[in-house]
Length: 208
Image 1 (spheres, rainbow, N blue to C red):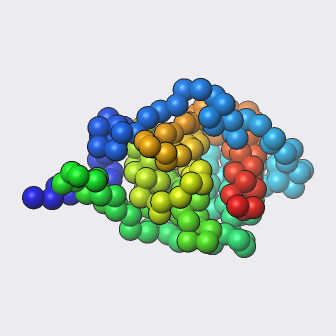
Image 2 (image 1 turned 45 degrees about the vertical axis):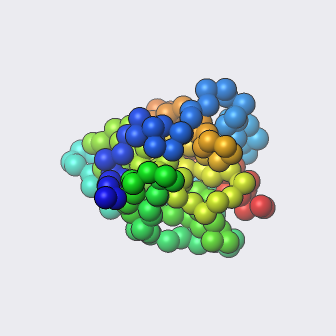
């Protein structure tokens, strides 16, 4: 009998056991979030300051996921150029991963999916602000594992509106992934770094 698992309940241990997922600790595997980052313009910095101020104002009360998307994720997508060709946005996309030779299927929905040429390039998971990124990381990796077979690197970003982490996934004999450090909106310069990394990744996948 096939066992269906909600992607929201998947843990990293589940992915390691079911898919052989391996975390790469070597920083050279995922150096893109630290290298060749371009400086931001004054206009971009001003826009990010408005995003930070809006979030801090709303954070005085509980922020739900759709508010995180509206206040934080959407401006970042716009500033990173991901609303424009060759990218386009699909939201709440069904994703399903089936484990080969095992009776397990993991199902879920992607909150925001950036697609280029029908390839799942940059996955962005926005979770409720109160939830730890530890909840969103295995969910994002699940969706990235569901992408069509490709030799290209897949990138993701998980955020709860205040905290951000970037992911990179490659599939060879076994799937490998790396992660960035955690960026915190309240820390000086971190939101600017998040946008720089997004723009860097958009440049990488946009030319492939």
